[in-house]
Amino acid sequence: MKFDTRAHETKMQKTLEVLERDFDSIRVGRASVRVLDQITVPYYGVPTAIEGVATVKSPDPRTLIIQPWESSMLKEIEKAIAASDLGIMPQNDGKVIRLPFPPLTEEHRRDLTKKASKLGEEAKVAVRNVRREANDEIKKQKKDGILTEDDQRSAEKAVQDLTDRYCKLVDEKVAKKEKEIMEL
Image 1 (spheres, helix red, strand yellow):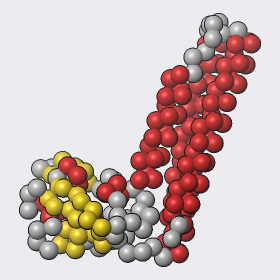
Image 2 (cartoon, rainbow, N blue to C red; image 1 turned 180 degrees about the vertical axis):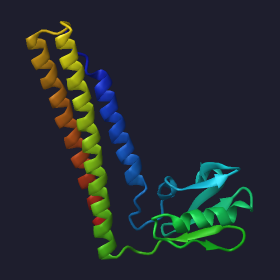
Image 3 (tube, rainbow, N blue to C red; image 1 turned 90 degrees about the vertical axis):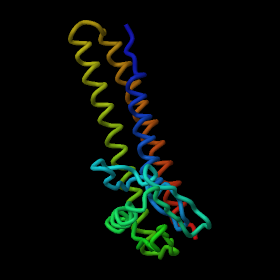
């Protein structure tokens, strides 16, 4: 019998997708709607993404405009953005909230690359946890007599190859994001 690694590969793929979503929330000097993804506001007692309560537009590369569907949400959105780690003070004119994106300083760019690197390390830890889970499953199947000694070795090698491939993909994504952050 051969060990099936597809379920574990799916989990590793999901880790990559989460990493990319996390990277989208790191601002790189130009306005992107994605930087608001991690910010929620209370909407009738339920934490809701800003895009769930407002229209978000980017009229130019350095500005986001948030127009709530209900004017009562203006203060809540403003408060949530100010409390976030976005580093931008929202400007509320009573109808819309403007988010002006100032150019990033060299120091802030370095901080953002450190954040990207940290997110990459967390993703690699998650990939390794999937490997450990798979190896535990392989050992259990060997113990239960489902896998032979040779099957166990080849399954462990297949899982390690999968882990190496996904760790390399994480490193590539981190390097790409760091390069994007450091571009002027």
